[in-house]
Image (cartoon, rainbow, N blue to C red; front, top):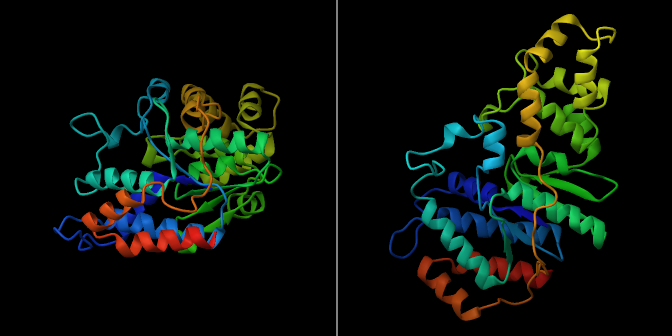
Length: 302
């Protein structure tokens, strides 16, 4: 099980009221929500290996170089991500609790958590052959879905307790594309304002899916746009050709990196805390006793 950690703690922050506080009154809503989500995921899905994947770089230079608008609207005055002030201190607490629990937390300089998850999923299926669950509220990671390799996404768009199991059949039924890579190509075409991707003007989700399905992939579609003899409506051809520069750059942004240089990861699900004393101190300091106990109980069941 690979956790999109930022997705989970942002959703916890916005889903749990900030009236949930530590004994000194400091909000710990994101911490409590994250830990409760972790307990539910482990207890429900029963992974034997677990990694909390981390954003060491939320806006990598190689993606910004390709498309300067990438996440540009989220950059704060100091150049860092414009995140809620009450959330940022809680991220450090989450990292501390994960370390005390003994849960692998993995990031890589210059890469996003999406790239770490893609790399670990690819590595896992190529070596151990174990199935992989990617837990996220981000649709971008649907590109990792691969039935043959055993990779699926537990999509938490409606909350962790209402996670949808994303397979190729699910993608076909919901979006009209039957593979993870086809979903990524359709995402390039339709764009994503939340990430600063404009998409191709006049091409929405359904048209994007239909075009990718008809021409196989983005490369095939662009070849058709360049071929006057191809059966491509004139209006769509004009839109694609007008967006050629964008279509050359956007895949660098949308597609995950699957070969991030990561070392060996000790990812076995803990059977006991790595540092029980530190875990107890954190639980008392931040008022996390019940949430920590739920995580430990879930680990014991696993």
